[in-house]
Image 1 (cartoon, rainbow, N blue to C red):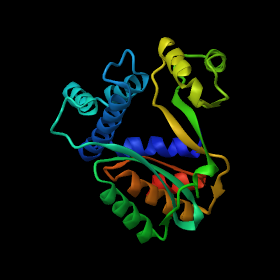
Image 2 (cartoon, rainbow, N blue to C red):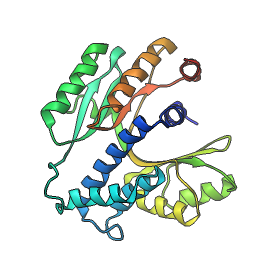
Image 3 (cartoon, rainbow, N blue to C red):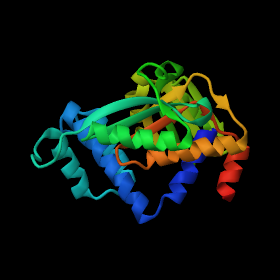
Image 4 (cartoon, rainbow, N blue to C red):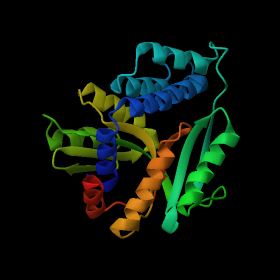
Amino acid sequence: MSGHSKWSTIKRKKGANDAKRGAIFTRLAKEIAIAAREGGGDIDTNFSLRLAVDRARAANMPKDNIERAIKRGTGEDKSAAALEKITYEAYAPHGVALVIECVTDNRNRTVADLRHILGKAGGSMGEGGSVAWQFTRNAYFAFDLGSKGEDEVFELAVEAGADDVVFDEDYVEIIAPMEAFKDISDSLKTAGIKLDESELRHMPNQEIGLEPAKTIQVMKVIEDLEDLDDVQSVASNLAISDEAIAELEAA
């Protein structure tokens, strides 16, 4: 499993409390609303909405919350403020590049919050295009192998369009072009595989390696950014070593 996936697993375990769950529900509700706004409120015809709803259900988000989010996106809920999706580029400490995806009803608040966290840590916001060229947007899936065989999963993923399938003990990561997202998602679902992660992700073309203490410093800045209500995801070109993961788990 890559360092990023190990880190995600640690965060999921640490984030099981009610406060974290509420933040996750807020993030998922925005994702659902944006998907419904862009493609309509029918999960049978709007794949992005179906994916967002599946992620919400996997997180045990209440049905009423999901339905309200869909209505907000389609405009049926007239009382909700309009949301917009914005991608920001930035630098964390030590020159680590960040792509920060946000959904907000107040752009000024979002930028101020990002600047505060980055500035406090010695990072900064970047100009448009200053960072994005260092990333490629790919389809990404991660899950436990379970009772499936490696050959079976590899064949299924490659036939559906995957570029890379990585096995680490009983954990699997699949990376593919964006265009293959739906085919791979449908194939995994048909095979009865329960996904831990399934998303379109900015993945670095080349990673930056730092010593463990500096790596952890950057990881904590990313966690602070991810805790903001308006932030949906943060991608970085930070290489996360096993040593840094071990120190973080011990903290």
